[in-house]
Image (cartoon, rainbow, N blue to C red):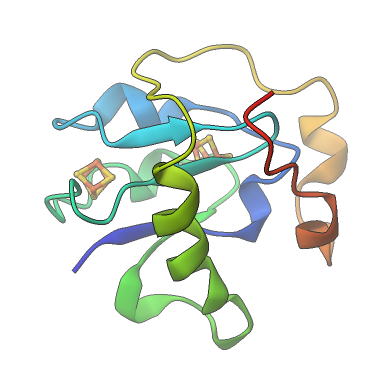
Length: 110
Ligand code: SF4
Ligand code: F3S
């Protein structure tokens, strides 16, 4: 099993999650983070750290976010590793809870 970063991370990217991960398995894109499913050891430490509740255990992903499992696996192979917290994106508060954020996901590593 793995943990998965879900839709509410998009355009927020608080990065509190990376600080607690014992195996440094977060990868960073321009406006979203993902977890590498083959590296995650299922410790659950990151889930409560996210201020916008964007992280889920694989088997607790909401039905409308099931695609994020494959999306995390795919983008984790393309994006650079991130191990240290940084400031959130400028409009993070404004984007918290906005529906349909998947349309705003930037997949290029930049
Ligand atoms: Fe890292 Fe643990 Fe979160 Fe997996 S569950 S991403 S190992 S902190
Ligand atoms: Fe994203 Fe939450 Fe981490 S917003 S970067 S999953 S702390």
